[in-house]
Amino acid sequence: MTKNMIPRAEYPRPDFARGEWQTLNGTWAFDFDDLNIGEENGWYKTDNDPLTQKIVVPFCYQSELSGIGRKERHEVVWYQRRFETSPFFKGKRTILRFGAVDCFAKVWVNGQLAGEHRGGYTPFQFDITSLLLDGSNIVVVRAEDSSTNTAQLRGKQSWTGENFGCWYTPVSGIWQPVWLEAVAETHLERVKITPLFDTGSVQMEAFINGPIAEEYVLKASITFQGKPVAVATVTVSQPVFSFTMDVKSSEMEWKIASWTPEHPNLYDVRFELLCGCQGPAVDSVSSYFGLRKVSSRNGAVLLNNIPYYQKLVLDQGYFNGGLLTAGSDQDFITDIRFIKELGFNGVRKHQKLEDPRFLYWADKMGILVWGEMASPYEYNDRMMTDNADAWKDAVERDYNHPCIVAWTLMNESWGIPAVMTQRKQQNHTIALYYLVKSYDDTRLIISNDGWEHTVTDLVTFHDYTQDGQVLREKLAAKNKILDEPIGSIGNSLGSKYLFADGFGYTGQPIILSECCGVAYDSGAGWGYGNNVHTEEEFLQRYRDIIQGIYATQYINGFCSTQLTDVEQEVNGLLTMDRKPKVSPAAMAAIIRGEQ
Image (cartoon, rainbow, N blue to C red; front, side, top):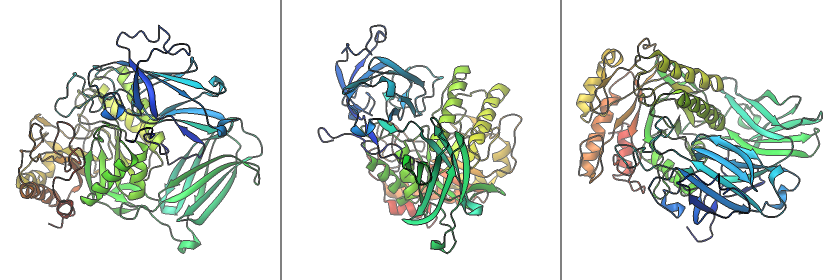
């Protein structure tokens, strides 16, 4: 990174973009607070300057791109930054936004508490208008991240002090962008965009923040590839209201442009909150949507009412130098390009709620995405509350992205270890299912990916068998897969049932959601399969496995582990610095069933 260059300077949430914003990414003062004395000693006060280090935000202190790169545990960290607002903030409300801070954050502006937030993977914001001064201002963040709390949503972050198995370097504190946004006293808080594929229309549900004047109207203007499609002007009479717009256009001979990975058509939409039909814009936001429908019927997943076989690759979203934080927007583009070049049509984002910029590029470039929350590893009341809150915020943040076709609520019974037999833990997955379904009934939901499902739209299981013929024979016995214990993780963890006690198969699509995992010249690292040493051997093993899956008629898709190596786990198709281990064209031929 060039000296003085602002890292991650692109607008953080392009599906709801305003022109008047200001990044706070870059160099901040920073320090550890191992004795947890900072708050008592007033480190947040404006006359205090206790922080002795520097850090590059939005990278966590454990990462090289932060400028610190220290891996030891520090459970409390502090940040401080001075800033001046741009001239366009004058006369407007100033919103301070955080993409994600792991895990508990308290924020002060000019020595006054702006607010606090719990949850390491979801965004939050504070209206700091009343706390600002003319000229220079100071924002201070205290972040607390327990290194050992296994009830905390932590995904693949190790809690032992060292990396082990498939758990990696922890990520603490700020790890997604920080920015300011200028908004009017009354403004659009969000718009929930629901494509109605069957009728060639789209539903807009608008949420207004601030006092509503009688003369306010919301104007929505839809275009496709720069050509006008539809305009609606709706009187604003209450804070939340809905309206529907027809997107069949004479420009397209009254047809619609549907979204698929092969043809990722996107409609642009401009929302303007006006003071009267011909009045000035009080607020203006740019967004987009894809007209697509996700459903299931007769054991198949349908995309736009047509059976669609999902060829997914698992991706844990770790990046060289930045850990969970990509170094640049180009990193997301590179990963999606490789996903497509390797022959896949989608990705299972594993144990990480991915950056909205990734989802933006997935929308534009065309891949399916399974969204997934980071798991806890212990069951208690605090975990249940955190999990429910995180899912509510995740669905709200990502609802408008057409690339997302499924939500993975839990994984391999992590955090719910007794879900097989304990009704209480089963009820948590059921409650999550209906909570998410009540916010979003447009996508498919996986209750507990891998095994021990309760209420679920997809039945998914994991099998890392490396012999293609053996896998073919195992998969052929559908009744055994559904009703008898299945091998998990190459049989090294014993056997699991696909359904928890009291639940059973009701005709849902069945997907092999983890498989392959071939280690190639692993060295000190590990993979699920025995190590192979040549490209030919690697490709042959993959070919045998994939052909065994394709030979099984009831399987509706698969997810290959995994896109890249991650630290000590080396079963990626790419190295962690995104170098292909084998020819992408040769892999694509296998994944597409051409070999």
